[in-house]
Length: 170
Image (cartoon, rainbow, N blue to C red):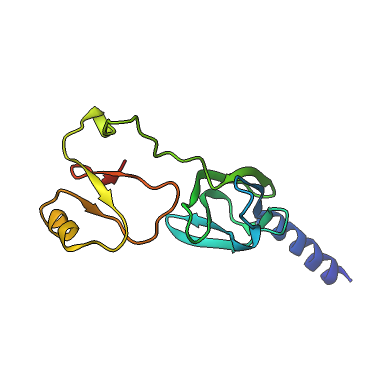
């Protein structure tokens, strides 16, 4: 009897130190034509996938048994830009709750007739981005560094400029 009691107490005392947290959330769709079943919620740490789930029909998701730490949460759907939430903190025995819009607000907005400024405010080395299957003319421009090729998947919120100096989309 004493051995059984010691084993039970040992189990509970050890499990108290092994608690993990969880991340739950509610996704709010910004477009009425979208559906939750096509979304994927990914919890990452240093670009490694830790947990993956699909939200339910109302947009609720739960990632359970997550070790304590700081993570990046990515909501994605083919044909749309990813919604990235950095610094999602998880503590032992707690639940981190998030309310997230999807797709996220577009960060690529431009003043008419002006190129955006890059880090430090410079505008030199900024070239347009070309999407889709490039023509021969576009390929020649890309070889000369006059245009940046960006792929075939086009969304409603894509960057239109690229900084050759800092290798970043603007």
